[in-house]
Length: 339
Image (cartoon, rainbow, N blue to C red; front, side, top):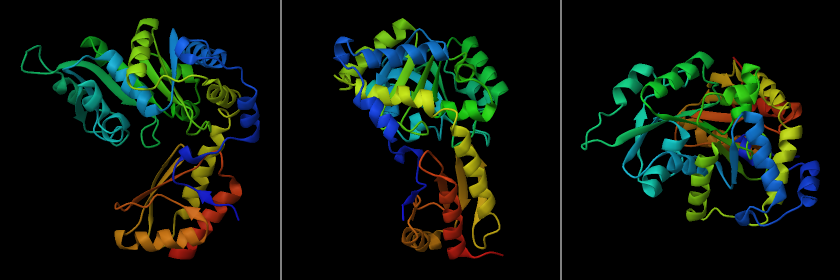
């Protein structure tokens, strides 16, 4: 029986068709700018999302880091959500490697950062303070697609203060699917955007950073400094191009399966379904039962992320089909029972 892995959408495996596209990809040396498949990916995504240029990098963490370093200098500051990936889950790279100070802002329940909080966080021009230079947003955030009117309001705030605006769009295509708009519309108004291909889009590795030509030139230099220059990367870029052609529209299936999973788990005795957004379901389990639940699910060939918090995130993706959802519901029901 196949293992059902709900830990993250990063666990997806390349499809056979994707592997064939990788095998057939023409390649060159990307550090010299000579890999035709990498160039095609960068140019296509930039054109699709409305930017001048793109830069293919190994990971979303590096893509965000290069974006922050291309926007900011030593002693600068960026405004960011206190539970945002760039602040909380990327090793403190902006501070450690970029000497860029993060100014964390509390999230509202919908993932937004209150404009009043952002206004209060902008530093005066004074040598006592770091220089506020950038606003970083994340969409989706814990599966939530940010309210579209809010995004425009936040961009307007940044313009008033002369700040750049960066989007961690690791799951940008999930946000577009939730809104029912194009990815270009989601990216509109941002100075830079990071898009990940190794999550819902199902590629084995890779992200693309987008921005102006001058911005990407700066990011390319920092990529080399950070050890991210790679050579015949076209085989990996081919997987991303395949994902753009074949795996974007099907994200709606992931969202529907997450909704079905949430529906099936509601009413189980001893746990609570807190929320379902896009391809993520959040459930609460008593802390003292977490390890027993993990052991029970593993015996049923279901994998979830069990930590020290009572909230458990379940993520649907390319490798989760309808049967996987029903098996997962049955596995949880076997542990908790029904009211």
